[in-house]
Amino acid sequence: MRFLSLLSASLAVFTGVVAASNVVDLDDKNFDSIIGKDRPALVEFYAPWCGHCKNLAPVYEQLADAFPSNKVIIAKTDADGVGRGLGSRFGVQGFPTLKWFPANGGEPVDYQSGRDLESLATFVAKESNVKSKIKPPPPSAALELDSSNFDDIALDNDKNVLVAFTAPWCGHCKNMKPAYERVASAFSSESDCVVAQMDADNAANKPIAGRYGVKSFPTIKFFPKGSSQPIMYESGRSEEQFIDFLNEHCGTSRTVGGLLSATAGRVLGLDTIASNFFTAPSPERPAVLEKAKAYLGSLGASADKKTNASAEYYVKAMERIMSKGESWLVKEQSRIANLLGSTNLAPTKLDELKIKANILTSFAASKIEEAVDAAGSVAQDATASVKSAVYQGTASVASAAGQATEGVKTAAGQAAEGVDAFVQMMEDKTGGKIKGEL
Figure 1 (cartoon, rainbow, N blue to C red):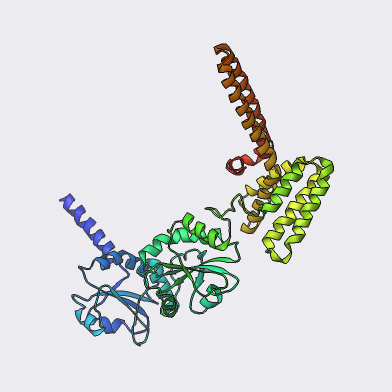
Figure 2: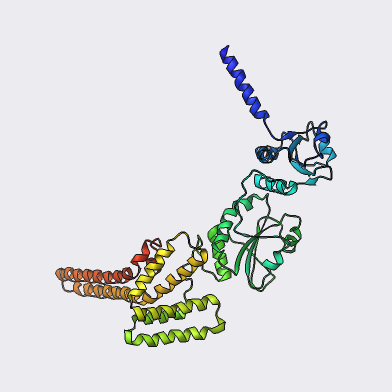
């Protein structure tokens, strides 16, 4: 008897929980007494057997909980049952159909955006001017385009622009979004390489989507500088694939995660001069410095600002080495490495430091190559010695092999020291990548 009492009480509690929904149930009898009065309403016309309706149900409950019921009505009606007459009255032809009914009468408006909570809440908040309880998502890293700014941005002669034409309800678009956002963040400091997106299913934006032949979502197009004719993006939708495409078409040097690559900021002609400067005897370095200055002067207006800034740093580094000695190079690399390890730097500052670090590696490149070449030369000589010793007997072979081994070890050690002396203090800060780049 006590078990039955507890069971009844539990069922009563469960029934109370189920009944405590903020979604208003409508039928032919109560519709006109609730809808079109002092509060606006979003009404879902559903059918109990409809799979899409079942998927929407928990989201719709969350939506109702997100708005004060005394200001906005979130309602539903079984348009294949008690609300069949309402379905006919409002021209419902599929399930679920959602319609927005303004306060104090007025023609209903079809809801045509996504069925996720964010899209629904954004629509209701906009139409009712009532703030929801849902925490808004962080602003998109991708630049938002619409009919008012599309031409000014996508067709800007001074910018390369990647545009994703999306729709709020599109599952593929939602799957792509995290990677696309990371790509937009990675290129946020690239003023002339813009990552953008547009809701191409929005009524105001559809003419633009039609202009560029957008028939499915997502459709991604690249608008190059100085051209109104876009290039269809046909690669994959991973972060790495987007970045590879943009690097190729924008002339950038980004890596996954947003950092610059090891070649960013390097100027080939000045790399050679820097290497010659570092290997030259001190009395000869002023002449090499003058060559670097002449190269810088030859760039003139033909080079962009970034290239000129890089070239100026090559010259500056040479002047510092001449005034403070070669130890300045290692100390400066160490200082930059410490700064690159900071998590508080702006993207533009990180770019500036990474370019400086890249340029400084060019100074010791030839010395490292010389050490490696020396190791290779010793190895070749050792091989020749062993071959010669083959004809002189086993003992001679063993002796020659031992000498060869020691020679290779010595040369290899010298090569390693040449690398380590320059980059050891960078290793911990850059994930051990500097040595591989050199």
